[in-house]
Amino acid sequence: MTDRRPVPPPRLIALIVALLGVGGLVVTWHAFVLSPDGQRLDAAAFTGAAYGQGTLWRLAEPVLDVVSLGFVVVALGATMLLAVLRSRWGLALQVAVLVVGANITTQLLKHLVLERPELGPYPGTNTLPSGHTTVAASVSMAILLVVPRRSRPFVAILGAGYTAATGVATMVGQWHRPSDVMAAILVVLAWTGLVCALTPRSELDAGGSTATPTAVASLTLAVAAVLAAVSGYAVLSGADLPVVGTATASDPDVRAYVATAAVVVAVTAASFAAALPLRQATATVTQRTPATPAPAPVR
Image 1 (spheres, rainbow, N blue to C red):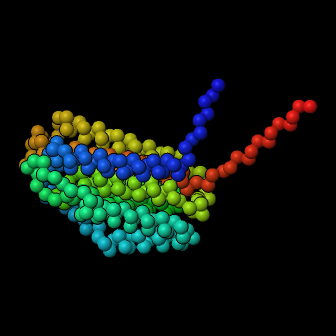
Image 2 (image 1 turned 120 degrees about the vertical axis):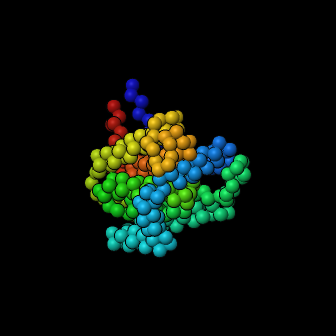
């Protein structure tokens, strides 16, 4: 006998993703901020960013210069305008809730809620989550929500690349620790799950199936996440590194820097790998299967 268990509805899965984002944020905070070992790794990566910074900063600075309050206003206005032009008023509200909610959450957590205890020779105030990374991730997710169904697989890959570039750029410039960047991405993932779970029925897609492009894009992002995570672990475990500036291949700070940057890429890719099919599923018009009439009684 075939066991046909009911598949959880997409909105329930979206809520689960939102909770996973919150859970990941809490785990990140506990592992890196409330743990001496975590603070040590964060501090090592922060110090390691000084190596090769002159060259890398020429690439990172233009990425970070884009992010500002004006950028948030313009990007949010553009996404909302695109939703309105598509006659999707509820969708315009969704992207506003996502972008505003994620960025306000980051600022509240960083300045009012979370603290950074002194657990060793690692002074400094709390900077978790990263505001710049939150802006980049929330705008990318908002675009993913607002574009037509067929464009979402491409937007997911581009958005993941832009978000990862911004997050790593904040590390290159020693603006943020790795945990700050990971926490920001998880804040945005939580809000994305919540917003997808609350998708109005009036905003469902009417287009055709995009199962294959969505699956290919999601799989590509998932594979990228696994490869980045494995690479980060390998670096921390002693894999050979090329010489960067005045650093040696065995410098522990450089290892921490490269490894945590890889983990940032992994978290970003995994978040967008989850968000893409989630958005497609919660915006899909559910086809109701007509009820099968009961068999006529045998007389």
